[in-house]
Image 1 (tube, rainbow, N blue to C red):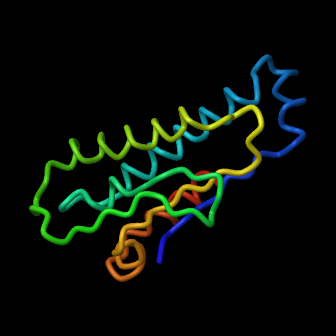
Image 2 (cartoon, helix red, strand yellow):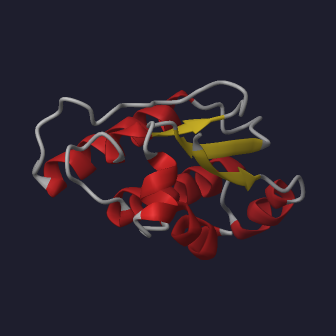
Length: 133
C-alpha cells in the first residue's frame, strides 16, 4: 500500500498572489519544491529504493514510482540516492501544468512504504504533512 500526502490549491490563492506580485504557478512550484526537499531529507536510505520511489501525481488512482529493495545492494550513499529522489520529483514538477492544477499528491509506491512509515518509525509522510499541511 502506498503512502501519500495531498496539496490542494485554494482557488482564491491566485487573487492573493497577484496582490503580492507573485503568480500562483510560482507559489505552487516553490511549495512543491519545499515538499520534495522535506520528503527526501526525511527518507531513510539503505538500498535507495524508498527515497527514489517518491512521486508527484495529479490523479491518485494512478500509481507512482514503486521500486523494490529486493536484490539491491545495501548501504548506498545517502546523498547520492537523495539527490536521485529529488531529481525525480523535480522532473515530476516540471511536467505539471501549475496554471490549472487544483490538487497534487506526493506518493510513495515502494512495496515497503508502509513499513518505512510505521513499522520502522521514520514517519516521512507524517513529517511532510506536519510541515506543509
